[in-house]
Image (cartoon, rainbow, N blue to C red; front, side, top):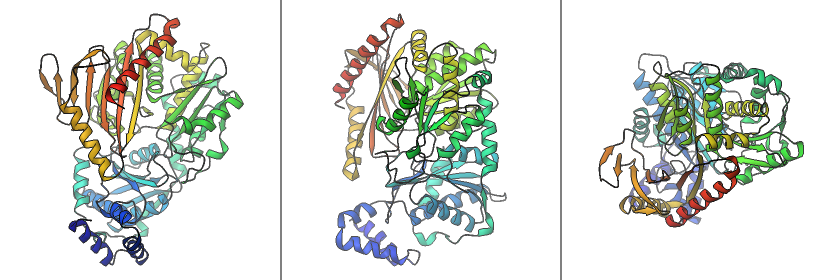
Length: 575
């Protein structure tokens, strides 16, 4: 361990703010597990643009009372500096992860100790309801204690501003700077002021449910198909109670739960990973849907902001929809329904991220709806909603990582709302004798057949971080002339904020915040994106290709052809 980190270790061991039991654990690591000690203290757990996320345990590089307290103290200092003569309040919610209640209490204590009023939910709640509550209570900000879909060893801490969205420039970097100024746990005011802490609960749920109903475009179809069989799994997370209640308020009454997974549990005992993007996590939902002959099944991640969907086919089997497909179905359903009802005009907009399928833009273009593109992360969608308030009316937005939102009364992706809309779209399809898979084929016939694949490579530890950095620099320095038999005609480097026309050499400025992402665009419109994850020790590769579908009879063969094309691109990138 270098000299600087040794000094940090000494500060922790000598600080009166560190409890004796934690000092004892540190000394045990010093004596018996030097590698574990180094990993726990070699750096500070980074307070990134979205907050904290890390493995739980003692150390500066871990989620614990002290790192959460230091982050909260920095946040409190920033809030006080921004609103010096105004009342200040923060609402806090949590998921069922191990220590989420504890970290919630720590954050509430620190905020109250700094004179900030705190609203704490009485039980676990989804991330989107936290966003809703920030706006409903007119709070200065919000905190969500969650590590989303990460393994059970992790926990996290997401920060929201007064618009209900996660921190974006300049607040994100400003808060980070304030957190960095907290050099020791001794700088934190840990002792709570209890009369500044209030508990909220079912009254907020009811307000949330009432607002969710406003996104329905065909309530008569919801009523007609109210008894449609829908299987739902919470994957041991926050949706276990809220989502079935919301869907019943929305109008769907036959919600079939997956009992082993509708019990909140931070150990996630029935899944390897509580991630609806992974097929293994949906296995019990699939089995329950097959058993009950449900029209659809759905599963949400622990904080219920992302959702996986399966649609029943004619032969009784199920097709799993990826995030791009779900977003495309819902965008098409909403725009098509609004068009039929005469609700579209030149002041409507949709938003997607740079790694989400361009099919969403194609659909919007066909209905003369404005479409905008932002960096990866739903916080950028939320920020654009704020920027364009009063100029454009937001209809919906999606990202490939299984997140979607309609309406602007919430400012983060919402799996509870999405579940209601997926069910309504399923009812709409059923009224035409179709399922969601048939709707996907109709979309492909009208707008083009897109196929997308995501590859994630995990690179843990210090060496992994260095390897990912080297890979990204290699992609910048060694741009191939062609891939998959097609010329690379354009690159987007979001770190350097430059677009380069590879044929003419002309460069133009990218008007988006800096992000360590690079994209290659091929002459057939295919897109390959390389992006290190902002929350995990991973580098992600996004592949998107498009083909023309002349008839539905070609669909299966065209899918195979495009999938083979993606496989070739993956081989050429060695991923």
